[in-house]
Structure formats: structure tokens, C-alpha cells
Image 1 (cartoon, rainbow, N blue to C red):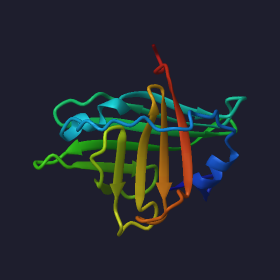
Image 2: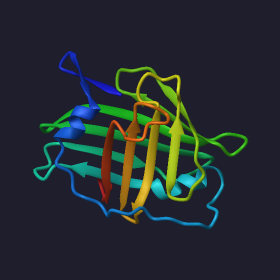
Image 3: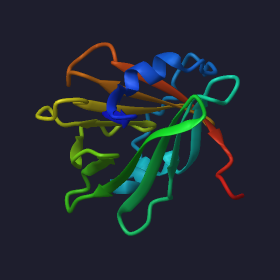
Image 4: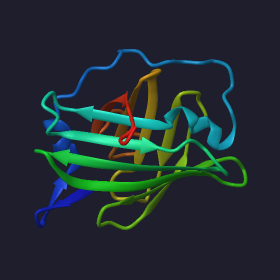
Length: 174
């Protein structure tokens, strides 16, 4: 997930390190009751999410449409020093067996599919061990209006390469 900026690659890891992000609750929301099947397992991700520095010049934003027809459509934008530095178009779809597939198309790079590895409520885990970076993407619902997105360099890595603590925000234009 390197982003092309001014003729060079800028790592999202470096961008994340630059962000002075608001803290989120320290514990994840858990639910021992079996969750919904298929794409409905990701419905809690619908809406607009933002992690930003206090001055707003550095931010990562994601926006997700609600599930419909077995598909969620999302997009993200990375802003550094007030300028858009990268974007990503993403879908999450349910296959015939109800497994989720996370399809990412980062700016200037080839599209990649990641397959679900978890069925826990409030947690989405997508892996592609053959991809160079990342190999695993995890979304965790920390609370109603807080989501952490963790990106891992290794499928079984204990620590993420970077973590984005999103807060729910109003969607642009509303």
C-alpha cells in the first residue's frame, strides 16, 4: 500500500506516523451471539470514518455504502499537509458460500483481493498471503463510533505495520 506522491513512493506507514490521531476507547466491543451471515457481517462499517491530526492537515478518510445486493462499496483518501496524496477504491462482496472478499484498488497500483478469515461480530479479518504488502487487513469495531483499521505485513504477525483509529464523522455533502 505505498502511495505515489511527487514522483516517489510514500508509505502509508509513514503517513500514519505523522498523524496526531484522536484516541479511541481501549476495549473492543464484543458479542458472543452469532452475527449475521454474508455481507451483513460488515454492515456496521457503513458510513464515514476519519482519523485526523488536530490541525486537520493530515487525515485518512474512509466512506462505505451500506450492504446491497451482496456488495459494499468503499473509498478512502489520504491527505498529507493539506494535499490529497492517495486514494483507494474498495468493495466487500459476499461469494456464493457467504465468504467475504475485500477487493482493493489503490491509486496507481494493481487491484488485489483479500479473503475473510474471521466471522466474529464487530471484527473483519481479510488475508492474502501471496500479496507483497499488506498481507492482512483487520477492521475492529471498538465502540459505536470508533473503528480501528490495522494493516499487517505478515498474515500471522502479532503487531500491525500501522493502525488507523477512525472516528465516525458526517459524510461529505450532508
